[in-house]
Image 1 (cartoon, rainbow, N blue to C red):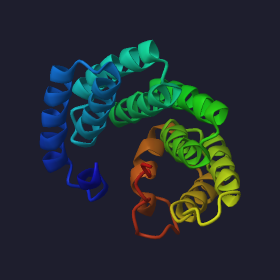
Image 2 (cartoon, rainbow, N blue to C red):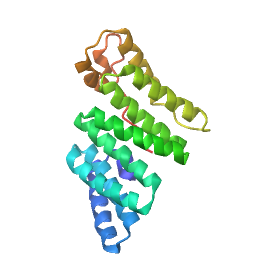
Image 3 (cartoon, rainbow, N blue to C red):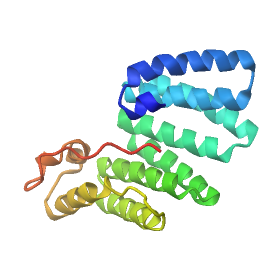
Image 4 (tube, rainbow, N blue to C red):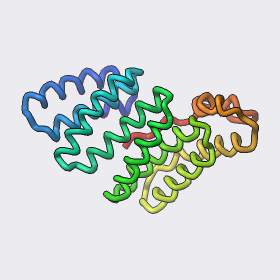
Length: 198
């Protein structure tokens, strides 16, 4: 997954595919589930969302059978990301909310904040800037309790949603705004930061 952190998704996909092949030979369901989810996450980043969702759904079933709440939450987040990339924001939001609930139960603050970031991105793209702002502010509140947590991706998002809420924007334009804040009058030309993945 180090390669995916460096945005080397195609190369990471090769390694993830091989890892899944090897894990399937070992018949270790938990390991297979993590590999299926990793493969789905990478496929979603490469624009192969439908294939990503299939891999993640297999991972979800395996995680549920093994009782891994963290695995289920990670996979719900990945499915949400894939649906968001497809433009199906209602499905994305539903999956992010389910993942968020599990992370809150588990008590994993940093990953809870990452899902809140993803949720806010989907809410903004769906035309709900107030909900997006609420999610991002909640993420900041969670991270403020974690020493040394990185909050860098939030200030640009909160500035963007503030500009959107002060300017008239049609609901059809929200998805474009989420990808390009320069379309908002007075916005900085820099792109909105990409969702964080912990």
